[in-house]
Amino acid sequence: MVRSNEAPNVAASSGRAPRIDIHSHFYPKLSRQQGEVLGLDEAPWLRDDGDGTGFMMSGDNEYRPVQAPLWSAEARLGEMDATGVTVQVMSATPMLFSYAGESKVVARWAAMINDLALEMCSVDPERLKSLCQVPLQDVDLACEEVSRAVESGHVGVHIGNHVQGRNLEDPDLVRFLHHCADEGIPVLVHPWDVMAPERMSKYMLSWLVGMPAETHLALLSLILSGAFERLPDHLKICFCHGGGNFAAQIGRVDNAWHRRDIIRADCPNPPSSYVNRFSVDSAVFGDDALRLQVAIMGEDRILMGSDYPFPLGEIEPGKLIDESTHLSESAKTKLLHDNAETFFGLDQMKP
Ligand code: CO
Image (cartoon, rainbow, N blue to C red; front, side, top):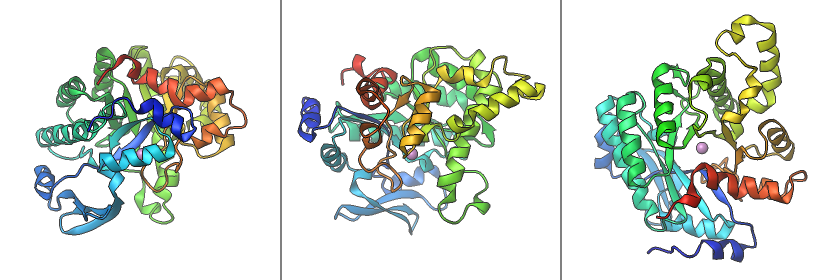
């Protein structure tokens, strides 16, 4: 069922301003047979138990218990109605990237995931938008798939912050970003395959320390390598989890750049001068953290992102912004809605 005229009513009925959540995940309802496309010993697939719950599966093993909104458009829309989210921009669960696999196999895999995402969005294409994934281990195939996927209806691409031991400054990965810029395709960067798992096995430290560090690393890799000097100004690139540690540490990085030539060797301008080249989401979970983020990034470069529907996500997407003690009403509108609409070109688009 297409419910194309409901978006304004949803916001009105919830009493909340229209909002676009740009950081939300799905895991398509992959059959075991579809999961076997990757040729792994333990195929990834999704078991729907029919009662609103299910499991991400790994072969015969129950990998993680999950709830229906992760794979069901109808269940998502129900929760979006309840929390007043007008539009969601969905990305696949990063574990589905499969950057370690054989590239031609993963190209077929990515195309399948991308087509399944569009099937989910087709339930309500005005409110559900999706970002495609690509076989980033082979940039030619990645360029091919991103162009195909965007042509078929995705509003951008979701990539991991590193690929087979290479940071985003890698010339091939910069070439992919250049392709996206040339084609006007927005890029969302998500941390994955987090560093030093052997030292972060307890207390969800991979989420608390690893992910923000990975995102910081990705950003500094682009800045200090001078990649932003080579990439076109019109590249649209956004980093999840508030840009990780970037806002808190940019003073340290600028200080180092001024003092040590090895840090400025490939980066002609102070690192902080590149904040106008990228955006971040708002998933920082604290009023003071949001204040810092706005001070560093500016109110035009923060997009509301909740990390829905995972357990560490913002339960009521946008609540942090709504209840901010320091943002003006116009700034709140930008963060909740306008910046995302511009970034993903949603105002230009009809399903
Ligand atoms: Co996420």
